[in-house]
Image (cartoon, rainbow, N blue to C red; front, side):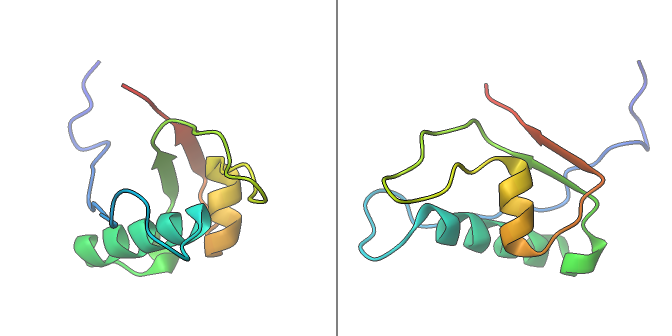
Length: 86
């Protein structure tokens, strides 16, 4: 299958790692996506797909963070959402 000119990774977002006081899982996802959008030189409205890294069990009192949930929190309406792990 030839994927040339069909798919591209255009932005990467990093966040602090480890135990960071007073931060939630949602806040890390929001920061990572905002950083990736900025890295790509895009606006939130330009995003048409979201692929997140593997699922981690939710922290106590926090929602289960699926790609769909992350999209909702960020106000994104991607036509494609998936989770991947290596």
